[in-house]
Length: 420
Image (tube, rainbow, N blue to C red):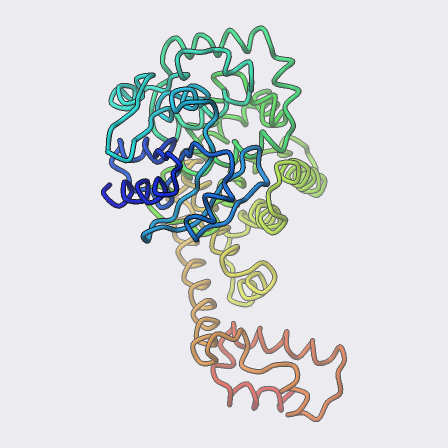
């Protein structure tokens, strides 16, 4: 805490008053150490503050220009006051738990009882002001996200106001662009996907952002989605899952399309829905590809998979994508109550995958990070070849030879290539 107050004091040497605000104060009140601190500064000219500090740069891309930089070893982002005073600034914030400020002398500004709400684990609209929802209806989803992530309940009046607003203004929710829905949904899924989707369902929000998920209720498949997300949420708590976004999104979308009879058409339909929604949600294309790969491949792990198939998958989709798909298969098996039935084959497949990954790791250890023992140019020199498709074919075949254990060194790669 001392460090953060020193940062405020340093900024105030530029004659601009500064406060710790928002997520930083909320996290400190909850005993969490923030990696980046958020500040409010009573200056309309962030450029002059940056110049006076001799550090940082102004990011003017969002609705509120932000000064981002580092002071006294602390990373910070600073925004101008919204209003003439810190109290007016705090009144503009969505939630009481985020409407708290700390002055440079350590004093706390808490006009809306945010600390009380943190202690009582409730989410409340700042000042019980339902006008904040009217200004931006997506704040409802933000409240549910905080409620799920922080495991807090909505304050009774806030819940009542939200339900009344949704009853009267469903049209306002439909007008929200999908990319804005996507930003909040991705944040909501990050830590507590099961609780978050449950809460969205309780407030009848799912039809606004993913109608196809709501449609699954007609076939009793919606409950299966919740079971899978419940297992995934537990996994996120216990393990650090690589590519967590793809892992969770696969759980959200994996049952969409399963009500159609034909397997090929079902996969095409699911792929299209995943791509359409996640593109509109501004999810990176590589993550979208991983989600589709997981959904299309996880069932194959309920049968024995040999090292050749694993090697092919690793080379096509990446190591992390295959690991996540196998982990996802375990989650679905657990959700379906089939963990015992598939435990042996899943363990065997995990072992086979580990062997393939170990061999590719050995390549990187022996080559200082390169993915292959030899480059295309080196193959052409070794075999006296000209550039062409055959070189690419040999590189692909060499990758397979490494992954399946036929090649385990540079010398072995040269001997194997000559034998071809």
